[in-house]
Length: 250
Image 1 (cartoon, rainbow, N blue to C red):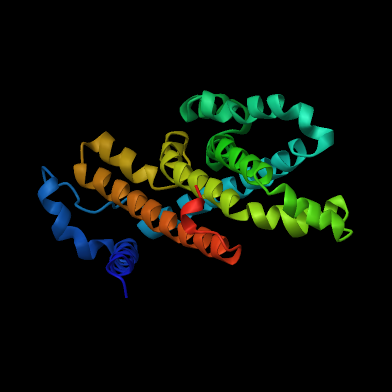
Image 2 (cartoon, rainbow, N blue to C red):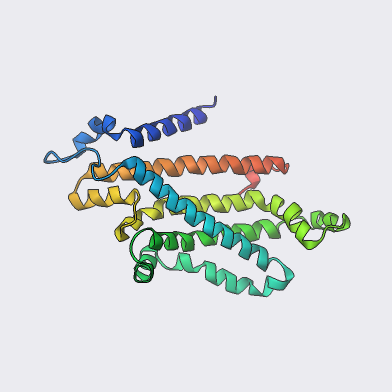
């Protein structure tokens, strides 16, 4: 087993052990507390908060992927090419407005909780997936498309059997970037009463408990690293199936 794989496995085991039995690690955080404050977050289950955090990120990423990929396909078809500038402007909205501003706008419309956080993450995740879908579909070799036409494939068959499979590694790279952005951004959802790891960080800031802040931050960071590596592995496998070097995937 490669040293990098050993490190990833150790990080995964450490993460699972910590969120399952955080009090076993209390001795590590006690030096960071003052006035006998609790060393481990005690206002909820770290495991439940982690799962809720991941749930919001996964749902938002799935929604972003469906819309961004569909939009990317549409604007690369002859009938939708003229809508490319408008589509770029729309998907840039999420990057133009800070997530906290999106939350402020969404709360009066949908109330507090997970919904405004979902909206913010959905908008924030559109751009990287859309741009990578666009890149993947427009960089397909004309010879490959011509060969598909020569085989008698109709436009739908060319899209499903040639274009999307060839563009898949690049699309996956956009999804990976969107997930990593969302993992960090989701922490602000706790400002509007959404359950997640941001709740631990905010509780630490409010009580001046550095141990809480560090716990929330470490779990988010480890999740980001492990998910980034996991999705990167999937991208490389998809690239190898197409006969590409993994270095060709952005």
